[in-house]
Each structure stands twice: as C-alpha cells, then as structure tokens.
Image (cartoon, rainbow, N blue to C red; front, top):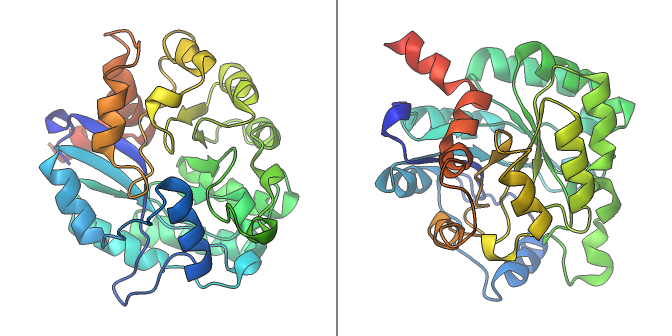
Length: 295
C-alpha cells in the first residue's frame, strides 16, 4: 500500500456478502437496516467490487464483518475469506476480523491464529448485535490477544439501524453499546488501541469524555452524514481530539462520496482535515511503518 498516494482512509466498511452469496445478517435484519438508512435497502458489493470502488477514488478502506452467531443464530462470513480477499487487493483494502466474544478462550485462540496466519489488522465488535457488554470478563481473553499484538479493537457505539422498526428491535439491546461500558476495557487493557465507532447517540458526551481521558481511545465518524454531527463532536474534533478522530463512512450503508461532500461543508480547521481523513488512521494502523519496511 502506497500511503502517500492515498487521499483518505475509510476505517469503517462492511463486507456484507460472501463469495457464495451468504449475507452477513439474516434477511430480516438486513431489510430493517436498509429501511432505516434509506428506505429502499442498498446494494451488497463483493469485496472485489469494494476494492475497485476505493481504488477509483484513491482511498483505502478497512473491511470487516461481524460474528454474532451466538445471539442471532446466523452464521458469519468467514474471517479467512475477508482476509484473503483483502490481501488480493492490498493496495486499497485493510482486513479486520470479528470473533464472537461468547466463544471465550476458544475465540482468543482463533484471534491469535488470524493474526499470525492471515495478517488481520484489527477486530470489530458490535455489542448490541453480539448481545454482550464490552466490560464482561468473558471477552477479556480476546482483548488480551489484541493488546499483545498491538491491533485496534473497534466497538460499535450508540444506537444501531440493525433491527430498527422490528418488534422489540429484533431482540437487539441498545444498552450494550453505551461507550461507558468500554471505559473499563480501556482501564484494564491500557495499551489496547480502541476505536469508538460512530457519533454515539444518545451518549455522545460519554464517548468524548472517554476519548479525552484515555490516551489510546479514538472515535470514528461513520454511520452519519457529517451535516448531522452533534456540535460538541465537531468542537472536540477541531481541538482536543484532533489527533484521535477518524474518517469512516459505514459503506455500503453510506457512501464515502456522500460523506465527504457533507464533510467539506463542515466547519473543520484546514490543518485538522488531513488528520481526520488520513493521517490519524495511518498512525493508528501502523501504515507508515509498513511503508518504510517495504521500501
């Protein structure tokens, strides 16, 4: 990956369909999510299509799925498939993995294998969809591996469109995605890099408090158009958190084209824009180090 040639790094995109046509969510949950974001659903591009899309825009993208089989009963897209396809498009795609925390120490062993054999660069957690509290000790063996390997843990925070509008929200509990539940993780794993995904409605202030208090906690801006960002989020991104805020779109739910067009209208300082769009992610993901090693 030639980092200098990139204009931006999108740290939050979803692999929603496998090569065999298996979806990352059940049709019921996928349909509800599509309606929540646009009313008509959305395309589910294959990973190769995602690579072409980002390559055309001179961007890189972090790609992941979510392993939530315990809570949903729906089998995941294989981490190995995501990693291998991203490796085939390593000029623009960066693989993250997802392991269900309910797997306990077996999940920790899987994470270690994925890190050692497939060069995944981080892990995605969706507490509401996976049905667990981030501070539950059953997840700690998994966090231990991530901290050991120096890769980030990305946690969905705030409300989710998954299950929105379904009876009982499709069984999905929003309380697990309160960012304050990640604060214990940041305390107990002080060297673990953590990304709080999304403007954390209705807990934006909690997310800002944690990110300013814990040195290795970041915030990504995915899932919302920037024109709807809470004013305090914009204020902190421009000041105290200018080195810890990351561009993320939530593609394919929100396109980076739409996100960037709205971001251009946001009152962000000129010197802060490149930090959010690329520089902070380069540092967090260790991409600059990789570039030096490859040269």
